[in-house]
Length: 109
Ligand SMILES: [Zn+2]
Image (cartoon, rainbow, N blue to C red):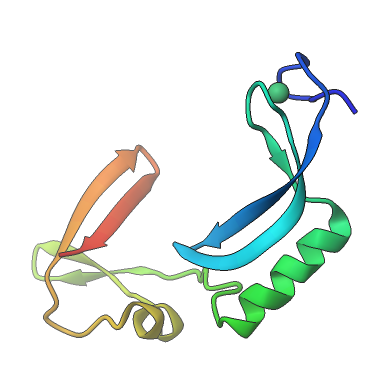
């Protein structure tokens, strides 16, 4: 099967380490383009990855939250499941920076 991204070479089968949230879930069968390195995990492999991520407690950590107010600043409420994953505590210092007009990054420092 030709790489659908660059179209310059066929995909090759390869074992690829899968990282989620910086945690390795192991090596899995993948199709990798030797030119642009586009990596595809087939359906059955994606299921295995999902199972591993669930076992590691890092599956589906995204949550909706709301912006609150604190004096003249705005607060971002961090949902409990994310706070626990990050071992985030009240008073912890973080660096917050906009990445785009609709995206921010918060780094624990
Ligand atoms: Zn390619």
